[in-house]
Image 1 (cartoon, rainbow, N blue to C red):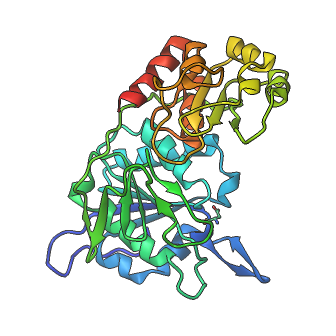
Image 2 (cartoon, protein in one colour):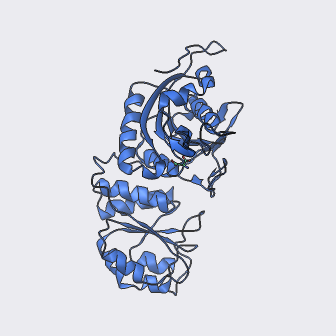
Image 3 (cartoon, rainbow, N blue to C red):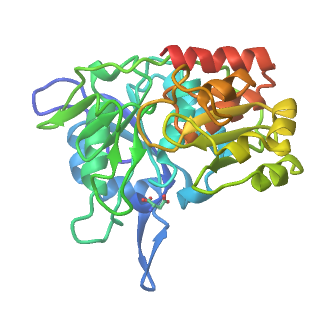
Length: 344
Ligand code: ASP
């Protein structure tokens, strides 16, 4: 247990909030001139004394990783730690995480989370000893949100820069801005006002999965983004690789160059593994019934068995497909789950 205070200034009991730290910039400071993730949970919580005014805190270091190194196997371990504390009766849970893969981790947790206890994921763009470090404010806002009754039953929430986002939509949109997390299609579902979370909108959570028993071995699901002039050779190379699934991020409404669409490699992949079609556009969802008359049109591709991603971008499509494959889902179950995501 780190710092605890049992009474609020208004006399009410404080919520109990567990903070689980996973590394990233919020847990970093400068060592020998470079930013390094090294702060554990105790140090992070002690660096923000204001937290104790809002919650009785329980701080745990889960890992101290740069988030590009985080795997879905790590997420399963994190899920177990969260579940244990939720079942022990905490009022709210906060995860601090590197921003590079924060959106995948929040979404992956949301697909599994079936508890009423809120889980708030946050991070920072500036290391803890930087001028104007944003981690302290983000952690405070996350604790305020996790401890609030109105956050219950909403699954995972991403809190950053005093905004509250759905893990189904939020993405890191800028390499260095402290306002990097945006939900391009939807916008934030809430915000903090004077330290109080406001959640006027609810984003649906159309898919809930059983926890896969193991991610060992992790399914191999690359994301391939189309660009001008691509031909079939990439698909031919992928067809001879050991893949369990594939996500194709097509142009605009979900279109591929004709040479890619006609390639022998794509046909072989379609016969062997689930192939999800999403868009590289960054907002909206791929079309399903607008264009035809060319081989890379969405109608031609969906007619050949590609699976439309609906609102899921490439990283989220990969997470959903990976959980399904790890859970040994059949092809009809995979199709039905993506269809549920599309219906929203
Ligand atoms: N730049 C990253 C961050 O903001 C590093 C990471 O994701 O670990 O946390």
